[in-house]
Image 1 (tube, helix red, strand yellow):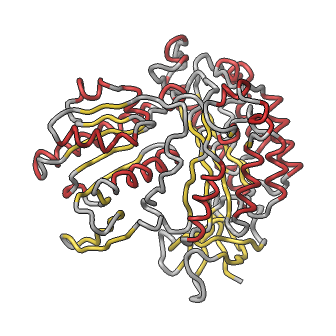
Image 2: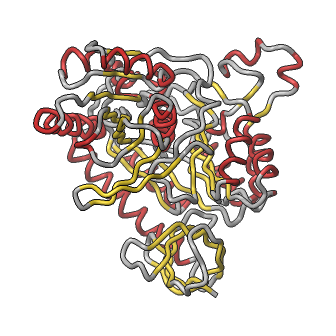
Image 3: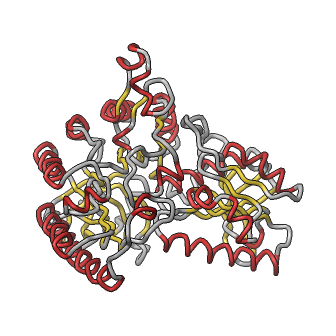
Amino acid sequence: MASEHVIEEKKQGQALVTKGKQQNTKKLFIESYGCQMNMNDSEIVASILANEGYNTTNLLEEADLVLVNTCSIREKAEQTIRKRLQKYNRVKKKQNKNMKIGVLGCMAERLKTKFLDEEKMLDLVVGPDAYRDLPNLVKEVNAGKEAINVLLSKEETYADVSPVRLNSNGVSAFVTITRGCDNMCTFCVVPFTRGRERSRDPQSIIKETLDLWNNGYKEITLLGQNADSYLWYGGGLKKDFEKASEIAQATAVNFAKLLEMVAIAVPKMRIRFATSNPHDMEIEVLHTIAKYDNICKYIHLPFQSGSDNMLKAMNRQHTRAEYIELIDNIRNIIPDCAISHDIISGFCGETEADHKDTLSLMEYVKYDYGFMFAYSERPGTLAGKKMEDDVPLETKKRRLQEIVDLQRKHSHFRTKEFVGKTMEILIEGNSKKSDKHWKGRNTQNTMAIFAKTGNEKVGDFVQVKINECTSATLLGEII
């Protein structure tokens, strides 16, 4: 963090912000798509390349190296990335023939050499565990060669890299704690693109968190494809834990313990985490959240479907009843906890009865908000290989709309619960609609908008009385 600089320039009438080292002369343009993990990975890439003479730029036309960090979780994401590659190449052809273009992340790992052989728009393909090799790969590209590295690691490979905070508001930051996933949900490409679960040394997590606090950050999100599965016993894959020594097993740090360690290390910093798998969330985690005021009262808890038939087809490793039991425990242990979800509509073999089970589970929980998608088959997944995508597109769309409409109703129900209450809000910046108003979130992760008084600034915690709301936003005033 200490080596990071923000450099403001004027170019073609625009404010240009670059990040990196003052002496660097080469320009890196990097875009990220998909999950929060991808956003954090891009910050790691920017840090690695800063040591190779690259500062980031927000002007595509001037970039020496253009990288897009990709997502393969849904077909639409891949379509978006292909369109971006086409744009990069148009700019390269017309304005900057020396520009080099690369793809990072999950889509890079999934398609591997096909990107180089078929797309003919790339110089560089780098998987999510190969970013340390970027200096060598960039040298190969600059020597006129195509370069690719999509090897997966058995260790958390970036623990000692201090990320360059890209597009940061200076208030909130991501801290990766674990990578990969062992759960093998049949619809998901993550185990194939990011590999098996492996966790990061808790002391390196605490060090990064303290560095962020000392640099003025007030909130972190601990990241993992499955954060609750975090387990540090000295390194290696989680699946090999039982082979470790008795001492390693006895002194292992699970997610609940990690949460407590971070909460104690930075008692005034807000702590969030994402994402959780119901199968892996232990009740100990809930008690830890309840114990520490600086751990936010919010859990993202994907359930994907309310039907046992669908959960089994998805290999979700839990039943509807077990999920409801977990929800009940959350409500009992953390009464003011907000809960959000992921839902897939129209998975293979989904019947109208299965869909109604999803709606009924939504009615039971009344989620604060959620992320809802129609199923799209992903090549390489177990569902893609062995299951028929047999729900008609129009049926998927109709069911998805019913889910969205119900969630909108529940979101409004939840935001109305805040009206009349006074709560602590962390100021993140100006409201999108008015520079006379602030925006910020409460501990439940709900956005609030409120008028400025002139006595507060970005990064301050303020007490806001909520006077009214929409389905997604709280409207109030500082008191």
